[in-house]
Amino acid sequence: MHCNSTFRPYVTWFLFPNNVYYDRSIEFGFCPHCNKDIACLVQRRKSDDKQLVQYCKRKDVGKLREQYKHEIEYKSTDLITAKGKPYRWVYGLNKERINKSTGEVISEQFSCDFFGNKEIVKKF
Image (cartoon, rainbow, N blue to C red):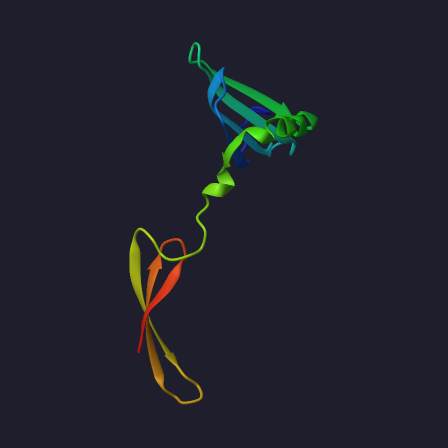
């Protein structure tokens, strides 16, 4: 919490656990009021299971980024699904096109998912 408001992170780094802490993450974002760069380090101590939260702003964010960049397990940007073949819930889409040169009607059947991926199934 900074300026008595919560910030929306633009990226979250999930860190490897070490000897002292587990369930570690760093969130990077901007304060909605003063537009300063903010980082929030959240980690849980193994000995007493206490959650520790540390906020950094401005120059300290760069230091924190350099300090923990070698401990990254994965980033929140890695979790975004890539475009490709449809998966999970799929629905059908039928389209008809007219070939301008021949005037012929072409019907196509697509398999689509809710992430914007399409794959042509049949063309007749």
